[in-house]
Image 1 (spheres, rainbow over the protein chains, first blue to last red):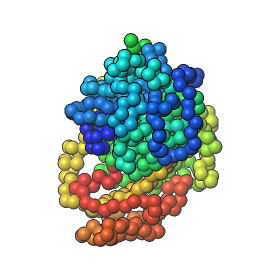
Image 2: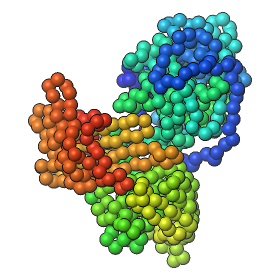
Image 3: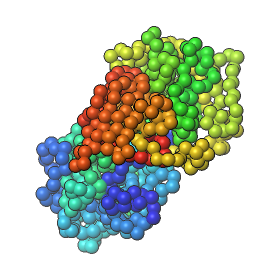
Length: 282
Length: 329
């Protein structure tokens, strides 16, 4: 059984919300890059501010349906994460956490079992069908070092049962890179650990950047982001969107002794490279 | 466990600085040594690869403030760290960490309103190379070029408890010796303790420990105590502060059996660690499962005097372990 799956199993079969794990490596930080934005294919719904993970009443609604639950096999077990459909040339890209596609680090490896994305999932309902992955990859930094500053992954999915491409079926969020960290985020996800059950989409609306995890300074890659949002296991990979429905981070980890704080990776150069690679897959 | 090992990464370069003979000239005449037990120092070195990372070079310099604080500045990977320690009893350290420019010739970073570092390294003319035993482990894997850092360094800690300005400072650039580069531990790799403890025989009888911690957002604190012939006390905090982070660590050992008293049933405990700690902390677990952790126990960190270690929001537990360092990591 792979290490990532082992961890997930201990956390109640939900690899998404892991206990903090560390892997230190020194590397030169990339030079700042100019902001880059890819516009969304669907408008953003208005939302009031909330640091609690409120249930989304209609996950099939425009602006919410691009978020979905991820089910995948690893090491003989079934695990859950969250993900977001992202606008890309191939109309088939899902962004999630790196540890939802690869266990990360020098001794890690990519998951090779079945991996599906179910947008708008709710209590077993699959209003837009199931999109199986045909390509999975994480940032080079996550794969090489397991640094949680770079814990971002992407999938390219095939067509659903109706023959639709993902973006055609549910739309897609835009994506933005190299912005300043102090944004106000809408955090989406399907938390499965108590008190949640993973059956409903949840949203922490308009939650502002709190700061960086101090331990983020001790790992390679750009400093990560913290926000107030009481997510639990299964929410990993859930999209953090900013004004205009732009994906600008994904949920990576939290601490069991502080469930009110959610940590996500900064979208910088390395995530932009991952996006480019995913978007070019045919 | 790994989290504290990472925190100790911050301490390891300080240990290296303060124990390196090269610093004899730069450090105050009194010299400085950590009061941590040799085993723990060795453990820190082992777990951190003597200095925290697999960086190929590590520039550093030392400045003394007028009120007795030592300020060591070091580069490690892409971080610049300003360590502040008090005098000869360096049992408490605060590290200010910021992303910056770290090259064999330059150290530069901004610490916001606390100050900035922008120094260039000028190697000594009579090129002094310090060589220790070249066993390619710990300090043995490094060779040190001595010289002077020139430029601008100003730093003023919280409330002005420490204030230093320097345009020149003696320093060194430590780098992995060529003959050790092939054997250098790779990034993220850690040395297993499997052989280290058993050789010293310190895995043995169950030792009582007390652990208390709290975390909120980007701020956390932890206190741990392990009762042994040499009881160990450790307190640490982490706090993000905009574009830099502040790590504090206090470590002390004591041989008196009175410093930790734990009931046989592990339902009550009292700790009274020596300086930099002060006061007493009392733990009590009631039959209904409620736990209290109270008392005037505090610790003096550079920049954070009388930091409280008991009461809410700390959550405390008492247990036993055969590994004396289990609660610490």
